[in-house]
Image (tube, rainbow, N blue to C red; front, side, top):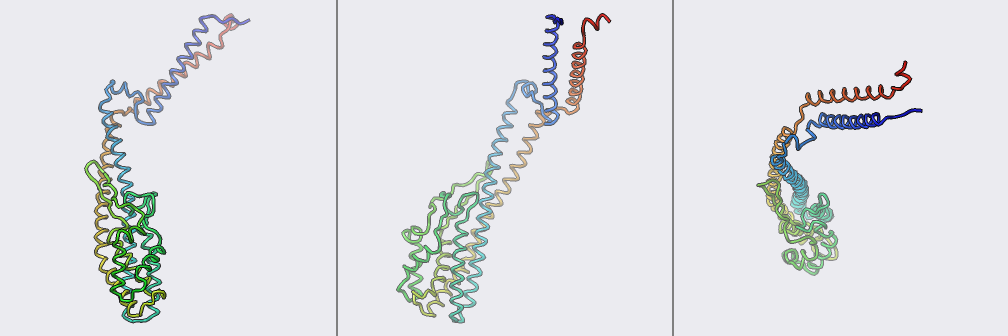
Amino acid sequence: MNLTSIGDLSRNLLQRTRSTEIKQDLQRLTQELSTGQVTDVNNRLGGDFAYLTDIDRNLARLRGFHVTATEAGLFTDAAQNSLDRLQSVTSELGNDLLSTVPTHVTTLREHNAIRARGDLDIALNMLNGHVAGRSIFGGIQTDISPLRDAETLLTNLHAEIAGLTDPNDIRLAAQTWFDDPAGFSAVMYQGSNTDLADISVSPDQTVSMALKANDQDFRDILRNIALTALSTDPTLALSGDTQNNLMQRAGEELLNGQDQLASLRADIGVAQARIEEATVRISVERTSFEHARNVLLEADPFETASRIEEAQFQLESLYAVTVRNSQLSLLNFLK
């Protein structure tokens, strides 16, 4: 019959406790070696967390600006791409109208009208652009496409110019409808008339994204493309000369509007440059604060490795003693 003394139980408990302590030390030291930072922050800082708290607060603030700047960059890039495509489409259409209209060829006019119908879809798609689920040109109403479809536009414009035969009267009626708040804006525009708030991309820099799909420049573009698309509509019964006049004036205005589109794109380019500058500054500041934090909490790799070896030796020694004690018996003692 085996008997276990109270002393043996106490020794076993002490050995298990010591084993747990050494294992915890090994786990902590291994973590410090892999991360390069101490785990006992309170001991390292002597209980004074003021400097570390200030560093962490600045890092959190910079992370917020980084997210904002990244989102603003996506937004302005998408706006720039949309206006680039819009400028390309309107420039090509304007040039083609001015080069083909003087020929007074019916088939060319019909071709121009068909092309304008397709370009109207493109223009509307560009002004209905989205990025990250947010509309670009809808003001603060970012959860919906700001403009309705081309058929809605053409149907309502057709009703405004139906019965008119003089090109000047037609253009005036179209201009009036596009500029009337109860006209184009009420029928076509689903966005907000309130601009997006300026976006803070750094502690001392903001960028503005105030373009909306119902701005005057965009309304003029849509008006000229839509009039070209409707000019050969047989239900309007417009003469060839009237069709030519409408197309020529549309081509002239589309080309004259290129400078304004370039100006809008330049404004977006300035915003893009500010965002890029802010992003670089934020990156530099974050690197600086992260370095300061690492230095503050840095664990000496050589010292840590030495302490790991020491802990491993202690654990191996403890296991050896435990094994030896487990083999003790009265029979072995009497041998």
